[in-house]
Image (cartoon, rainbow over all chains, first blue to last red; front, side, top):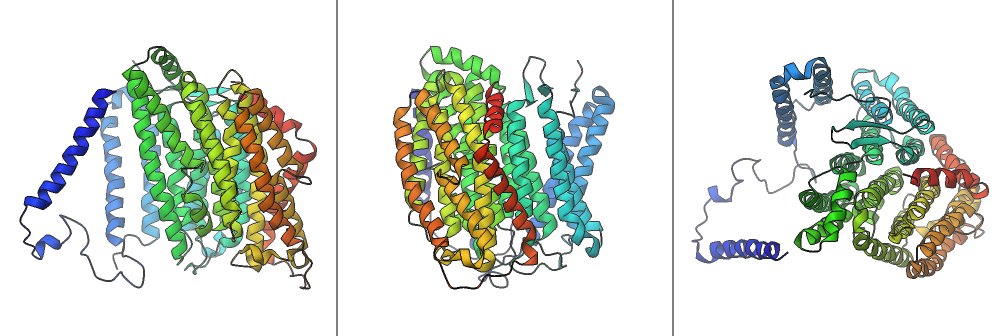
Length: 116
Length: 500
């Protein structure tokens, strides 16, 4: 029990120390680039789009990418163990790919792939 | 070594049928003309649910089936009496909820504000139910966790699906944030339990925990912390105090049928997972979780009932009432001794009766909403002259929730849980529950009496759009009445399900 408590104290102490040290010692010279979204993401705008709605086009594309990315992750070990898995694995994999394809068909028919 | 497992497709047929129906509904909406799908989608979803209900009934008559078994013993999915009991409750609740939600749909190409897109609503609801069916039969930590997540993720969208409704979005966001936090705590608990026992299979965990528990020390304390953390996630799912904060706002912001769905089906799934974990996996730590569950039960019923006294909105009142009922449902589990099986039986029986009466009460709220969109309690004054049948049905469900005649089913349910608590020597909890039952009478009867105040309004003709809601309420009323005069079959089923 004691080692866990020590770990908690260390972790909390490090977090507090880093935040405080950064804000106390660091120079504060802001410019335009520093206030923009970090690395990726949409440009921040002062007003939400059309009343209270935010545009989600970017997230839709990103999420679709992640879905197919994960599909590949599942395909890879299946390809490596293809001989051992045999027909059963093939059928299961076809079922998996088909069910992911349903997602694709849904996004396509609902107009999720049209940018404007 | 062969990497492939044999899968017993008969055992997993209920969730399988539900998932295939969900995909079929989505695809039908995409590739069928608007004219056809207007008449197709909801009946298709209903047919799939009834098919899954048939499969569950067939499984319930046969011997227990297990699948996804490991070489070292232990199966991830077991369709025994316990699983089929919960699956039947969830699927029957879905039938009623589908009937209640029919007027929400609008089959036009552009869904107007205030309505929901039918295909997405039906598919998400079916997907959520497939998760519930898996939770009921899941017998290892990961299957239970993934089942719970499959229950929750579509539910967030269902809550906020109404077009152009900021309250719905707010409700969905609150629901989402609370769910994510409690899931994170549960996963942490699972990691601790796995770390101290080396297994995710519940029987192995029970075996390992009993040796851990024998020697006090860091490992034993870590396992206890894991057990308590896992409780948190299920406390959220069943809306027990202090994990209940999402419930009133979410129920009020969501479409009323979705609130009914969350308060009955989602809660039933939470109890299925909770009971399996406590009774099978964490049994050696009953001295740790028993008092914790007892305190949760006492606090849930007290806070739920006291706050319900001050509500002015029908759905919020019902929401706080479901929080209080989570307390009554937890009470027999606090027994945690050799009498635990009787406690489980009491919780199962209570859940069956609660499902019927609570679905009925929410169904009446859907009917009242057509006359009074605000759903203020004050609007109910003189409802009996405007909509006599609705008022009589609502009165029946409210008295049943209170545990009074003519809703005798609720009284049977209360007697069963009280007896289990007293036999299991947690008399203090039974006393708390008795006080709470009296508090509950105050607000249930206030609303019921308000409806029967004479008023000089003319009766409002029933709308053709709500015939399916009336059918849903009629089913719930019929089940409540049958359970009031003849509860033995349900009690028998519950004791068979508790025998594991």
